[in-house]
Image (cartoon, rainbow, N blue to C red; front, side, top):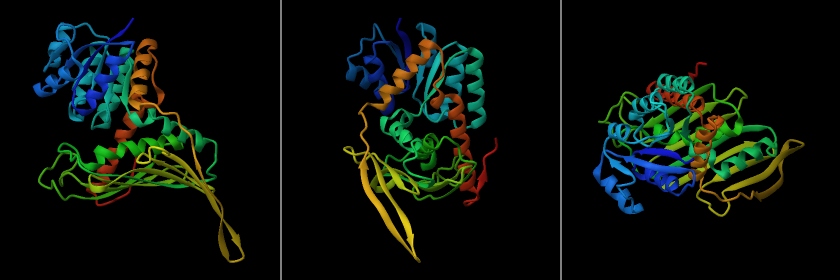
Length: 345
């Protein structure tokens, strides 16, 4: 039996989810809702949707009243997530939500517990954790090919789009933080952030009272002693999507901009000879990775979770809550000019 889905929000990312679920043999898209008529018209034309078989509406309330559902896919601004997800769970629907789960860790925890009480699945679209390159990277780290893990660094920069609801921290950092956590198998215990506001100092929010930051430096301190630094900026024409983990015997490099070799193990170490330290064993190894669309894997896993009513451990409400808690502490550090913040248990 197919899972009957409603998709809320068909902007850029929502359109990709519509494409995947329409093509999936285990899914039946029965409703699409978006408050913007242009988005609804565009999605109808793009996929030649028949409004007699798929409800197209601007209102979630209409969806609830007129169609029978098993699950809801929520691809709306994060500020709307709490109310929509809570409503869907209380109605007995499974939920797939775009990241972040909400903008408040307390709300995230409440929704996670509600899903457990309702015996429904709450899964968050942390797409990178379904990326075959990221998963092969985790295998490589776990095989101890890097030696003792020392530190990590990442860059996520581009020239637009510029968000007007959250800053660059909340827009971009969750990707690299989730990858570091996934590869290391641990969460940071302390965090630090410093940044600059250039474009929207006149747009304060609860999370960014001094305006929306355009550039942020993030530092994550892990219980093992590992330390990671992340550079985030949406005003940089030098587009970068690069994350590295450095060990005593090599560095694992994930570079999305290199489509032919996105995952590389750069081996090498230093050996002391007298008072000198000499580089040894330098060798580049391109790690083969099977190509697959990560978002398709997200959809596959969500439908499987609905069918079996079992959680996806690495993209659950618990994981999402922890990530939002980390981001909240980073926002606190930004507001306190780079104070190191300890993340409470």
